[in-house]
Image (tube, rainbow, N blue to C red; front, side):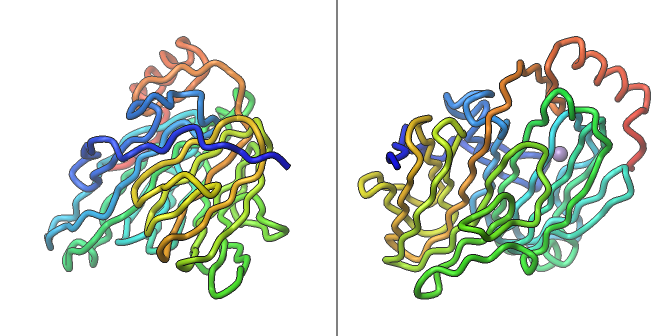
Length: 290
Ligand code: MN
């Protein structure tokens, strides 16, 4: 197997606020030159690096807004996020939990700091990924997967290190998430000095976000905390060695080779479909959520 080479290690971009609750660094599509297609099927990655929020009686967050044509995946590392959507689903995403929401044909949702977390204040750290859907599945009915930490696939490595599998499979250990296209999504928990090997098809778009600690990739590339590593589309094998106790979000997937038309919260294939999404949203076809 040939080494999958590191294309670039990106420092976090300047943060922006999503509503008043999430201070995020966008790694793609807008924040860097990675662009809308380069990490397909992952369309967007917003990273809320550790941020301390003061106690408040009024939960911070982002109010009701629509989505169509893709999935939102929220991964909580610190803090708690409460979620409600117009399909009647709601839940709390706590540390280590993942929420996988298929917007599909259209949904309204809102995301706020959980009430108890808001009252006590504390550190929030999370990732939101937008996973694109192929044209044939863009109008699939909305769906909601609440993936608790306890239900993740767990592949033990030596000395207490482990690969937590959210989606896809790592050396036979499967993750609980249902995906519409081939996606691998792991949290690698590596103790200082430990290393892990990964293998992904050459043409699958692959990246890693260091959430905690610091790692060395393929023996040479240093990836500190809060940095995103983009891999070239050649070779398969990756080695990650932890320079400190580390947590690394690993994502890889088969690209969806279709045109992308996007406007705000909609990710479709054509401009006409965007116009239709706006019209459907304005005429109330995405349901109700206060
Ligand atoms: Mn949203």
